[in-house]
Image (cartoon, rainbow over all chains, first blue to last red):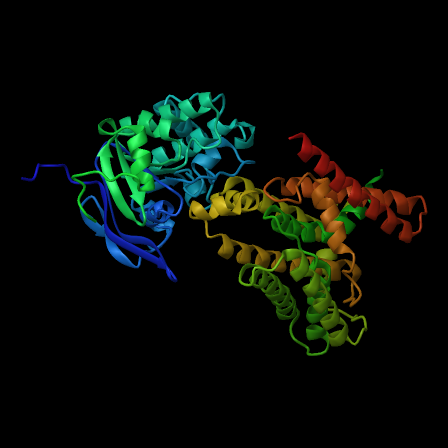
Length: 261
Length: 284
């Protein structure tokens, strides 16, 4: 008996990645459904980062396939993945602190004027970039005084917000977030969780890597538990307890009904 | 300050100014170029000897000189991006290599008797009684072009991003290594142009020129507000910095201070400028 389920937006089948004698991914599966926040948890060495890097285009797996919207894709580098609509918010944020918020939002994708000055002389359309930045921030209900502030004048949570806003503004299919609430206090961490929910509400599914179990349980729809290079379990967040999730992560417990990878 | 003084200051600033544009570009990316003065001198010797010894038409000789300085810029950029060597060390090496090549090629002798084409930038025109050289106009035009590209175009903003957070620039798709290579090469072209202006001002090809310009340009860049750590600053600041140094030196010369004291003062100025930059960074 199989139940009808929607086509995954993003899917990986039997990914393998070896580093010399170490097998980081050992036939790992992954699946992301439309409109969901999928948390990826796993102990150090479980292959979590390797899986995410393969999905983000930062490494090429030795074996296995990746599908985006049902079609097979090959990412040769992170820019490849970005061009196909996958945005990643890295742990160190990848922002230029001395530059303004609007500049950071459009970094690498700057807008130019439509006229001769823009096309031939490459004149930047700064007012339009500022206006669109304001729009993107409003979309996420993220309040910042001015788009012309330098990113380094912002708090840690606000900087994270800028990185999240950037990915949400340009992602077409998936947003991947690597430890977005790490190093943030309670209030700022909650603010970022709110932003993540609004990204999902915009229609973009989110892959969230996190060590913070309370945050994982607060914001995710499903949880992918990574262990020993494979997917040990994938469950709906409300179908599992935090202690059971940790137990599966460490191998103290296995869940029934999980398809063998 | 009288008209003739300003004219003199701008003439002296003319060469250092153009060199300093290249230095600004390099420093904005978090690097430094110690080789610019002797690379410029090599360019002037190539230009002048090609014209005088080999009877090559002056325009081609000048072009050859600029090609040589551009190649040195390309060399700097290649060593820095391909072999991942620190800019300080690489350009210290090419500083010495360029100096040696210049001395060897010129047999340590000045080249004179230059054709008019080569010294044309030194010709003057008058605005309300004060004489300005065409070379000064070229310097100002180059500063304006550099300002526009750095502040008003995407690639210019990418230069700042590379200096501020190179990994971030790479992750958003900016071709950082390729841009650095192009930037060092462009700097090389600027050093060649500066050499042409030097030849125009002095009327000779001097193999001993260019030995202190690395520190002078760094002084101008830092005085002008550009951070040695990269990612912050402007060429407009550099122009002001170069003029400040020029005014200082002019003032010292006018009061009869021997030129060796100008070297002393320049050294002190560099330290003051870097210290101010550091202190303002700590406040941030």
